[in-house]
Length: 317
Image (cartoon, rainbow, N blue to C red; front, side):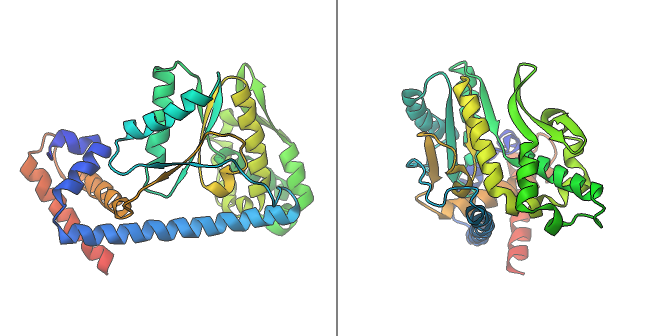
């Protein structure tokens, strides 16, 4: 049932209601196919870029080319709510983990990885009373980029010179300037070098977001996949050993190097639903912006129909 309350939730309930509403719509099917194709294309492009970085790391000898991760446990999310998916994973996690653990989650875009991680965090904290950390490599890439950009400034480079700054020796030096451990009772990453002395938690929204960092992250990330992967694996192990539940979401190429038996891949036996979910998410956000608070069911349907017509035209142009 499409109502303002359902539309304003902007969650799985909303997308499911929109998919059901448009179940017989050819226009919705057209938009869903277009969205699904875009998702798969982006996933393939991202995977290719990541693999290039992994191959560079293997070539430099940073990571073991023969490394084999633990087996992944497949979870089909088709027809399941986020709570059901999380409970299925937690059944295995609770059976195999001690006071702390590392849980790895992979899957194609659109399978609900982000939503599942949020649910796992909520349940582990509220139901099990666990301390939970959701790890991201983003700030580590930003920290290395800050050091590389600073090195360029201190060595008279004309802007950011990747060829000079990102040598194997320099990257090893930059990584040695990062330390992950407890500072003031909390786990954090410290940057110490090239005149920088700061905790990442204190500069993540300032120094790590400046233009010289933001615009050069892709260049740095391509050649530091291996170094960052190993740094992250060590940091995650430290937290798990300390009794913390670490939730790690990412692509297999990078999370493979984190040792844990609790590895899950979200799949969808009906791949068409990935496109339908993304189409419904876009329609939900656009329609909510078009209607007034407390809008009637008829007004919501009209807004959805209008947005669907616009999006189908855009997809076919």
